[in-house]
Amino acid sequence: MKCDTYIVEESLLVEELSSISASRPRVLLQAPDGLKKLYDCLGGFLKKVRDVEVYYSASPSFGACDIPLEEVALLRPDLVVHVGHAKYPLAEVEPPLRVVYVPVYYDVTPRTESLLEIEGLLGSRSWRRVAVVSPLTERLAAQRIADYLSSRGFEIREAWDRPILGCDYRSVIALASSVDGFILVSGGLFHALGAALYTDNLLAYDPYREKVWDPSVEARKLVRGRVYTVIRLRNQPLRRAVVIAGARPGQFRPSVLSMVAKLMEKIGVEYVVTTVSYLTLDRLLTIDETFRPDFIVVTSCPRLPLDDFHDFHKPVLTPGELAMLVWGVEKYVFPW
Image (cartoon, rainbow, N blue to C red; front, side):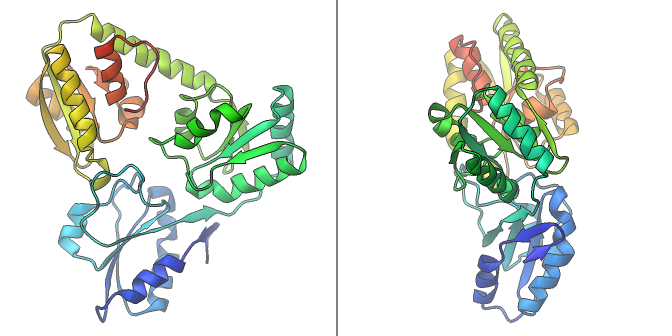
């Protein structure tokens, strides 16, 4: 099904909706802000499948880890439809409700100029074995680039069954030893910066802006800043910390909390655990004023310390950075 410039994989949605026993099911639609423009199209489609009562979540959504339990508790929907991601692969706690994850794909064919630019850059770097990776939404564009490069004699590796997430780059790790370099197809800086933490051999292509670029400079700058923060903290007296646990199913990570507890014990730091569904600067300031910690560790989303709170007046660490602090490691560790 086509909605705007996206192809929606609707088969599982139809199957789930048809299997609900309620005479007029209540459905909650959730999408990241960039995909909320598909709500009208999706809502209209649902109403064609059967008689449904549709609610549209206007709250921020940052992925399949971020199912809005407070809205679910009030609305009590028969089905939550999460748009734009597959089921979150790192979840340790399942959502206590029925959720269907609906992939959508940006339907674009890269311009010839962009394809030639990519081919030229690969040639200038002497890359012949190339992995093409992407988040789920950009998979079609990534496949079209892979097909073009294959037709030009490049040896292509792919991992379409394991799309890139901001906290999950296992496809990059798995392919790194078998390729000369990577092409990451995604919009903006977010995913490219994360991938560049794992490999220097990376080109990024933004299909929304038709831009080809090398994110390694930004990644090296980020790593230098994060390592400096850890080293500076290592040379300070540390007595008290706050550990932030996510209150959404995909962001509550018992195994990571257990690891953090052992690391805190190792360095003799007293800590408290706080929970929050949506961590903002205001929430972080309140947490800091309440507990007066020497540093803060975020276990819900490892991108928050890097992207949102890197300039907070107290060190805000990922679990991996806490491990660096405790074990005296200077090689950057991300995320856990």
